[in-house]
Length: 412
Image (tube, rainbow, N blue to C red; front, side, top):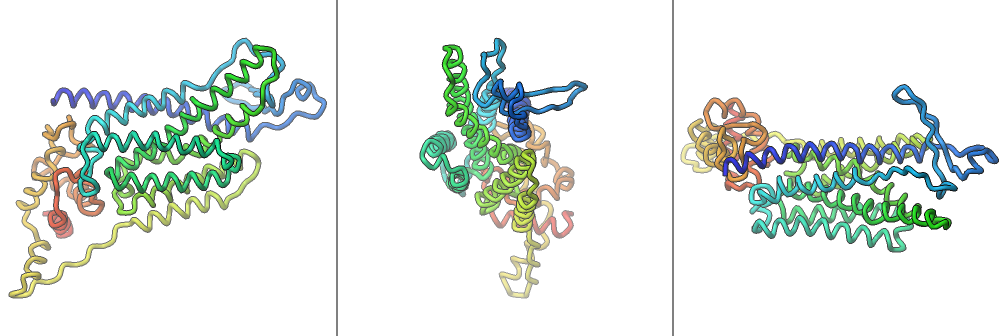
């Protein structure tokens, strides 16, 4: 089992690396083409470019050379012999992302997806909830886009925002906060790749097929593809945030994590909208200002509050004696809690199935290591209550209080 966990760690590393590379390629292309669409300028009426059907062009310099990209309103007069298709960046990103979802979450669902204080699920039930969210998300989004509401971009955006936040709420009622967040991201990512696979590429194929048959392409295919491409552009910042959210338990471990995610997504969309408008020649600072204000408000709302001072002990007062015992715990008691609740994962050789090495490299199997990591223990186990993952070792509120009191007293 130890060798298997070690092999899974290597697989995790390599697939995560691949996912990062392909994601950069896909998102970079998306950002570039939206920028290009917003930056090209129409040719002069009656010019050779206008007669050729060019709707806009742009001159740029990069890497020591000059570039002159041109966009045709529907299609050029003749189909080029060498035509590049942007699709594998999207496909490879989703395939590697789904593989990573399986390696990190589904392979070790008991530790990574299940929080019995949220819902007492089996591993297969938790995986079913996760996979179901991807399917439900795509079906709802695609049906909405194909409905009459799909022609009203503003209203469609509001409905999708409400839907995504609602899905986040539902997922937090079944999965651990960390797993709920990552599945919201995977759901949005599935919508994005579904757009490429089901709308953008098929629409482009129809344009090419029409030209090959000597017919005039129907511009509706280009319009639909363009709409979904713009949607993907607005999805990118929220997805990127969720990709790194597992490093920030202050968000997904909050009691209202679904609402926090909704606020952060809204901030990302507002900031992205600013850049899209700016590339089009319009500077609207109110959008990034609103986005930053939302992020600042979230930071204030979830900021840890100072712990109340323990009540002084009073002779004959059982409650006071209990407070006194919590205010000055013995280190042997602290070590016993850590050994029982934390060391199965955080050790040189973890005994918890699915872990070949200690998460984040934090080891707690000796008194020296406990003292060295006292601040991290307090932050993760007491302030954020994010550890143990999914509370799979059943740490009690009283034990968290003891750890907090030990840290507040100087962690001696």
